[in-house]
Amino acid sequence: METSWGGFCTRRPPLVLGWDVAGTVEAFGDGVTDIDEGAAVWGHLAYSPSQKQGAFAEYVTLPRTALAAKPDDVTYQVAAAAATVAMTSLQSLRDLGRLGEGGKALVIGAGGGIGSVAVGIGKRLGGHVTGACSTKDVERVEALGADAVIDRRTSDPLAAESAYDVVFDTPAVHSFGRCAKVLRAGGSYVTTLPDVALITGMARALFTSKRCHFVQVASKRADLELVGGWLGNGLEVTIDSRHKVADLVVALKRRTDRGRAGRVVVDVADGWPS
Ligand SMILES: NC(=O)c1ccc[n+]([C@@H]2O[C@H](COP(=O)([O-])OP(=O)(O)OC[C@H]3O[C@@H](n4cnc5c(N)ncnc54)[C@H](OP(=O)(O)O)[C@@H]3O)[C@@H](O)[C@H]2O)c1
Image 1 (cartoon, rainbow, N blue to C red):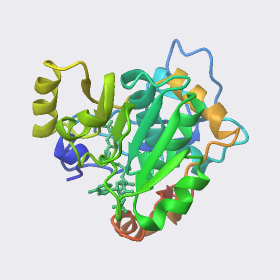
Image 2: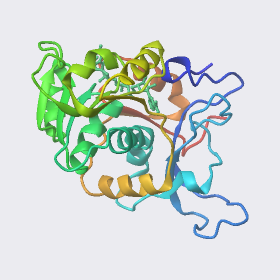
Image 3: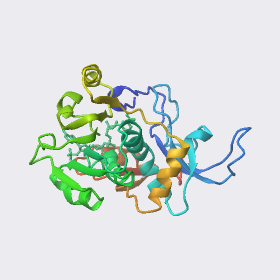
């Protein structure tokens, strides 16, 4: 069984693990006219309990609308590391948080997979980005371009006298109730997990000028093309380690390692051992 979003996207056996994909087109269906065999593409599988595919396989099928051309100057590893986390960040900050030029964002978990790329995406949307992370990640988050960094081990990110347009709670450890006090009127709280706190937050938000959202990431061609351009132009995705698919157990253990910094990439190009 593989779970994601706190169990919401639980997939049952038989299953193949993995969500992000970067590779080449082997074949395409009738009606697809704008892609060639052998083209380099990237995207991610739809997060859904009914998802039967997994990215740690040599072949997957995706709708054309969920794939974009991989820019030549972006490696397969970076594209695979970026797909879900960058889409989640863009769709949270731009679509739900309406972050734009001059807006202010607080990214909680800024040292993590989603949070670290959210810092760079928030900057590219024209925002002023504050990242909250653990002491070990402070320098890295500064280097990613955050305008301000709060060390969550020594200061409460929600105690500051700040007014944000969006609070992006990437590890879903806070709640609308706690974050509302640092949101401007019209501002948004965005979380990554659909839990009880979300339902309570959405109900409370009805009686305030602030909004409470859950992001449900989707692999969208236009968004992938936008982020692909940014990746080729300096947007950083932190890669912790790369593993051959034959070492998948090591890779999966690394994903839960407390010392991990960034994304764990699994390379299936050499195939599974026979
Ligand atoms: N809804 C969607 O569409 C969607 C899409 C993709 C992923 N997700 C979900 O999003 C979540 C985050 O994914 P991720 O890849 O960013 O995970 P990750 O790489 O493990 O990063 C999580 C970050 O949160 C920080 N953190 C943990 N506990 C914290 C706390 N109590 N207070 C503040 N920060 C804390 C961690 O750093 P420190 O503990 O070191 O500070 C870490 O940097 C996962 O649950 C994933 O399933 C949702």
